[in-house]
Image (cartoon, rainbow, N blue to C red):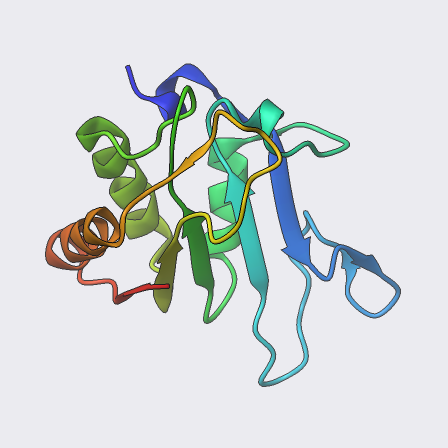
Length: 146
């Protein structure tokens, strides 16, 4: 069973901008000014130790809302440790979700500085490149490693 299958909720969701008079609340689909891009980051799985939000949102509803937006670019962080989203089953499920929402591209990265939790470890550049190649070869979605 993968992390996404075990946890039916997203514990930490950040949309930019979060809550503004111009754009409204971030977890609702809002029209954006022409030429705007929406920034979105979702911490999936056992992420309550990494990121917390004020409310709960099912993963299905989150992806439904994201797929309704134009020109979405997804950022995905990969880490090793007790919360490890680099296992083949995790990557396969992640790619299937991305295939459903069809983002313009995906930015793939890992830790670049010491994390808040000492049990979180960075993923090597080689592993990130493999993840990007897997995503591109199975979905056709461009992936960029940072």
